[in-house]
Amino acid sequence: MLKKIGILIRAKRKLLNMTIEQLAEKSKSSVSLISLIERGKLDNIKIKKLSDIAEALDMTLADFFTNQNLKGVATLDLINYLASLPTEKREATAELLLKVIRL
Image (cartoon, rainbow, N blue to C red; front, side, top):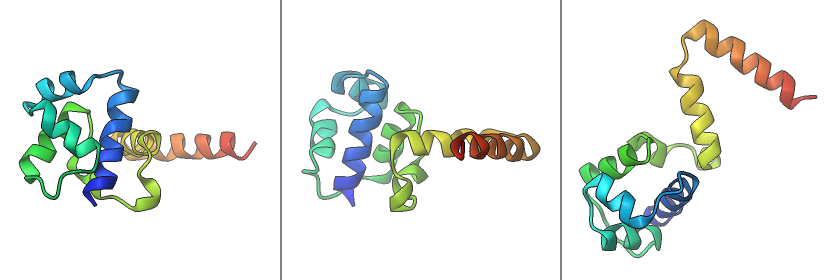
């Protein structure tokens, strides 16, 4: 599980053009911890620390534990964007996106 989390953390960090050092500083973690996580070399991590890393990446802790098929960075960003909209706007936006996708 932590290996998949590390892959997601690295992908989001790179998408944000953030260095390991910047992520470590922003999440109040060590560079070595971030590096271990990203390389899948960590056996366990405290939920609070994982939450700090998620927050530094503008993610939620739940993003790490969602459906395996929905774990891409862009997919999570889209899901979180849609979830942030008011219900009526969310539905209208989803319908529009689906129309565009099906062109």
